[in-house]
Image 1 (tube, helix red, strand yellow):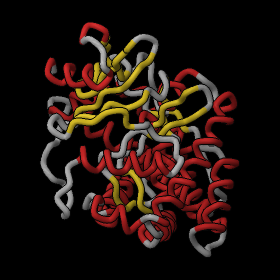
Image 2 (cartoon, one colour):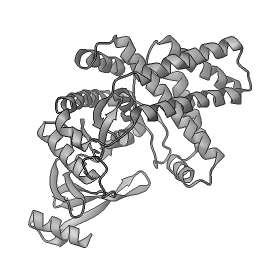
Image 3 (cartoon, one colour):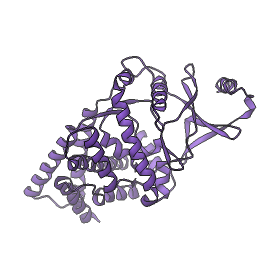
Image 4 (tube, rainbow, N blue to C red):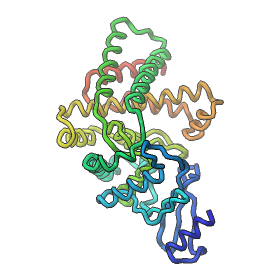
Length: 357
């Protein structure tokens, strides 16, 4: 670290003693590979990549992917951090400071109404980023991380269906043959809708913690991996706060029908010739699947608390009972579409939950 600091000081033409280094907290957790540099009244973010081996077929490392992507997006006028200095030797970037709060932390402390102006701005910038990646896809392709979206989504869908079955099992109320047939049919339609949807090129690390807010200006900050995925899946995960490592943190959904309709209308104008209602239903289905995945993780953690990954999850999320209740509540109460099949699944989960309360 000392050698790295010396190089940074040399770049800024200052003495090493003029650099003040501060850790960056993710709630109660101190992040190990990033820190804040203060030089006078200015702040910068230093990010050192842990993975130093190539992760693409073209042989690029996460450092090289992020360096290229951030610089290209910044030149294109997008809300991403500006690279101030770089060291390939140390796999390190020094970035302009973009703000003290993330969307994740703000969502834990502010109402959806208070956040609506910045949420609209985030949504607009997300759509603009999609357009930029698509227009410049050829130059980004060598930097694409291999990610089998279809396989990952298929496994999540299968897991989601099992989770619905587990929630039904908890209620100790058996389904009639007719109700089971309706549930299976609705789940098949949901699955096909998601598996047949197009993918877009963008970041593969999409979470509310990776949107930093400066006033009402949002910055998308993590591009160590880019690849093909569902943009509706990105939307759902960007607009849902996890509140990990935060005192009293819990899940917060920032999506509402107004935002989803704005997004869906943009999609049919710029990406695909589909009914707006189909796009809205895709977002709603991803939202439902996201929280079924959350419920599955909670069930796994409680069932096997000694497994290292579950210990980490429970440390991150805190009270798992409260987390479970909140996740199920969001499944039942956040309906982003009028799709009959998604709402059938949602209503049946609500009935299962009522039977166990």
